[in-house]
Length: 212
Image (cartoon, rainbow, N blue to C red):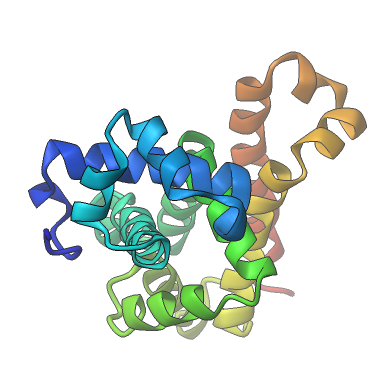
């Protein structure tokens, strides 16, 4: 089986299985999904699916690990090269929102895993964040540097990052509610998302501005 740390080395069949399994797991949940249903979605027979992944638990763990790594790799190099806190914050917000918008099944899988206790999520997130080059770690470090430089007011960087992540995620998780409370979002969701990115950046950046 291909090394999960190198997604580009997956075969076409493996990528097809991952795509199909992600959709099924996100729609039916870890317990509700069936290997036959995943095989059907991937347009392969069940025997071939078991050739690559011996059981549902193994497949789920591999799909989840792949999804986490996809997220971590989704931010382009501009996040590490952003010269200021403001630009780093902007790139992080845009990158996070764009990933969730274009990876709806991945978002639903993450939410389901959290609601189920987050054991598997915790394992992968702890492993992924051992390095300070992951997107959340980069933002934490940038906030610390900005506080020290007096660019923003003193805040707990970890709380600040949690606030950024939660505001980027909520309106996708609660989309039906958001569209009721904010009718323009129902008329043109993509336009709303772009406006939301601008609003979040402005609100968070100004909220962190130094106080007189």
